[in-house]
Length: 112
Image: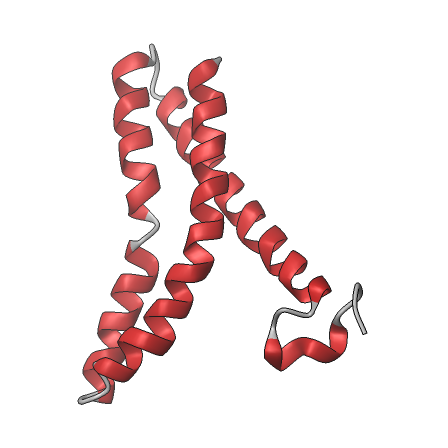
C-alpha cells in the first residue's frame, strides 16, 4: 500500500515540476538554441515528451520487481502519469484563478 501512495506522490510532484520545466524549455533553452529553428523543434519535441519517462521508468522498474503479475507495473505507471496530469492541470488552474498567468490575467477569480 505504501508503494502506491509513493507512486501517487511522485506523480503529483512531477506534475508541478513539469510546469516549470516546460517554461524553462520554451523560454530559456528555446532562446539559447534558436540558431536552427527546424532542429530546435525536433529537440523540443524530444525533450517535451521524453521528460515523462523520468518518473515512470523507475516506478515501473521497481513495481515489476515487486509485483506478482504484469498488471502491477502497468497500473503503477498509469497511476503515476494520471496523478502527474491531474496535478499539472490543477496547478495550472490554481495559477489561472490567482491571476499569475500574465497572458490570462483577465480570467483571474481571486483578485482585482
